[in-house]
Image (tube, rainbow, N blue to C red):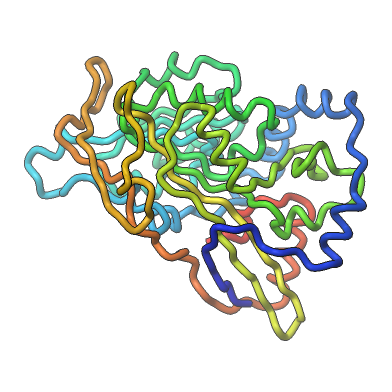
Length: 350
């Protein structure tokens, strides 16, 4: 099996068969069932982690290749490194597959991490790598809870949402980003990757799973929205964030022997909180081939200050850092099965 990555600004074209399948899937689940899914969303994610414990996701080592902002911000040999820590807020931490590798790599980063599922947070806190001096994990519904009760306002350098926003009802997405953005410092950056329009998992849904346009429910009751770049950029703009860059990420998982071609489509973006009331993106911010950095000033009262550190907020594209390799036919079957039962990209993402 080979991963053939590509980056594009336009959604991929559908085959005639795919287009017909989507056009014929016009009926949506009843309002009663949709309301039930919304009310039971937390329970369904808790059950997901009860079934899968810590074994479903892989460690997300690819994030530092895709997002240069996540690489270490301080020189370990610097005598003043302790006074220049940065703060990362991971929204949707799961069982810690993103946070713990970064904590090991960078001793000068402090993490806040939240998840909708209390069970997932319990797994994080029971991990031997969990250290309350370096991270704080807490359960949270980012669509309505007061995040600033745990994460101080204007305290965070980098916020990440990795396959998180898609699980939220579309009508609540802007509110969720607004709530998260309250914790970003002026000039702070939000990094996101999520499911893209016409992803293989979206095309796999049979009739009876559609909630609304591009919004579906899986067999386990968890939900997934599939973003166009226009939709993603609009949500961020409505929430008051400035776009740095965004694109589709395409990974074609191919096994020629078995005749299997699995086109995964993700959206990926970087957005910035305005530094001042009149702040707008300049020319250098609008292009992914330019670099810019800004002073990272810690507001009073926010722990682990990073007063003199510089945070890169726009970097050259990392070139879709998936790793080519070969996998047996039994693993191909596993990939397809994961997409059918629970189409989480991390089941087969690297």
